[in-house]
Length: 189
Image (cartoon, rainbow, N blue to C red; front, side):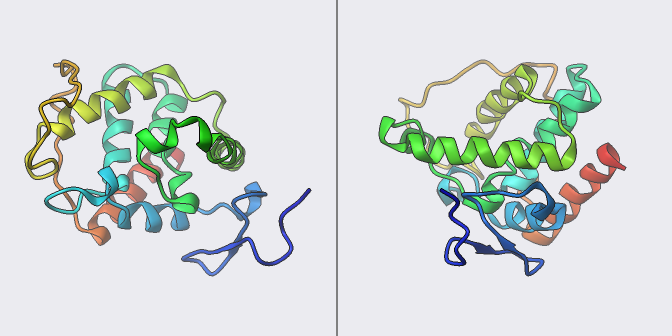
């Protein structure tokens, strides 16, 4: 049953009514995605300084490029967290819980709409998942981001090929927005 009765929409930065439960690819805009992601902190905001999902996404895209990823894979790197622009994010332990299956279904449907809008070839490439996981290794060791990393935090070894491009700046929202839009323009034209 469609849930577009007028009460289940998000007012976006551009002023659109966006229905995250019934997403229409035509309602997706890069400006709305960039605005939202540049204002959302990683790690549910449990950081010392702001570190946005937008900056993270730019770094994932660049990391995919360094590993020889195709243009499509780099585009995916840039937009791999784009659903968070319309849904926000939920911490991984909660999102992975069986009772959050509905959220994961909504997120997958939304990613299909975003992928259709930007002509991304599905599914999300494995290299994007790899670089995203690598980013956690880099981010968790940066004390500006994770000041007091719990010793139980599972660590993976940092891929030395990525070190030259994983330059975390902890950009303020306007700079993160601009960096995200510049990377988007490089990739999508």
